[in-house]
Length: 616
Image (cartoon, rainbow, N blue to C red; front, side):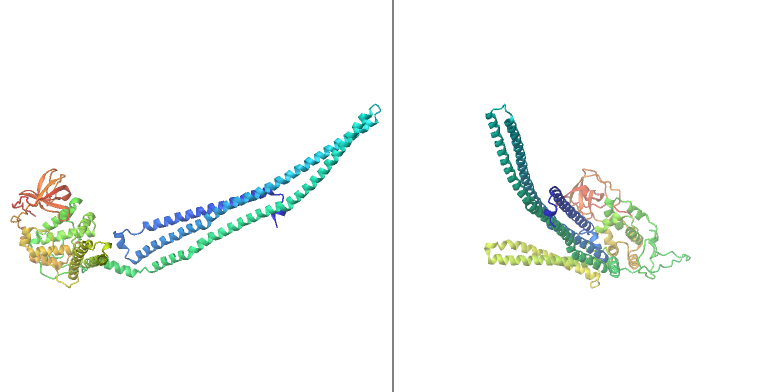
């Protein structure tokens, strides 16, 4: 089966067919190219999807990924990232093994096809030229024969005519002989040309054209084989990544199987366990007795007048007090404050409402209400953000976890600093042995800084380990808590101040034991909290400040200022966003630090005049 013998007369159709074959190959190349673009786009979308759901660093989401279910989800995201990488591999391999190779092959194929059909057209032109020569020789032979016949007839006519001279007859005879000779020559030439043409034609149709068509056939068959191999490669590229994709899916399955509901439940306990005991029974209050009603230790709805009654020393209920009561005036006042002033004003109101055990209960009730019934989420966030360094505002179990995390973090920092110090020490030794490499003295300053940093970190570790030991019961509880208190109030009731401060800081959500409340009531008689603060010594001025904006101090503890007004500074910002200032001997209070420009001056004038008394 050969195109040269079977299709010897189909030159034009073969030319069209081979061009169609090249078009098919280019169409396949375009198909593979679009497939690679789809793979790249799919991989990009998968990576973006994985990145979108990755936990953000240093965020609350990162803490949520300690559970087995969320860790499994994180593993799924990572595996999807690797899964996307395999699709990128598919795209790269198809581009290099198929698209690039076939594109180069198409160019070579076009050149080869052009060469073969050029040879075919050349052979066609040659045989057509031979045919034209044969036709010309044939026409010339025919013309000469006709001319010879006419010359012979003319000679015979002249010879038969008696009126024609002998010379004219001779001339006609010679002309006839000449024409006959020319006809014979044309016949010989025609015969020779015919033989040559037949030979060329035989050579054309049985040698040249078959050879050319055979080459075209081989070229077309190579194209067909090449496109088949490319299709096979197309499948192999996908098949090569199937094991890796299978491993990705196996890892996802393994991560899913690692989900442990019991472990997650235990982690929830560890995350939110407060360490407090459930509330005990509520004491019975006998209203049938004519005697004066005692103060209930488990009720949060006592009025200020009830706080002056004789405290009850009966049974102790160690449970928490829950805020299932009507909001009182203090809570309404606190919730009515502006968000920008809430942090200080809430602290100040809580501090100044500790005049009776009932007020202390109300203040603690407000904080618990914020936490549990979500009355003021923004204020709670501010209070949490300004927590003490020892995490004493957290429940015992949560405080222990925070302290342990802090100790571990400090130990890691110490190890990093020690590694840096060891590396610099080695570098210094190298400089000492090879002075041309560097100055050993230049490292001493950095070594000294590292030594100081390590010492500071160790002191921090000791401090936090002490607090941790206190929480775990290895050390006695501390009796001092850093907190702003009124000087006269501390002098009159130091035990009460410490007890209330510890109570507030150990349970910011209001979760305190009734036993502690009883101790407070026993140590602080109700009548002691009605005293005035006339004997409090004023704080000295430490500088001046200029009001940048007008501030309306509408809440207790704040002071109104006008823009551009100059005032005295008596207490710097302690990190809560408020600065304590004084206008004159009778007017002082807190303003937002961002509202004033402070000028600290060691030589500022001290003012030792009594402040305005603070009434309940």
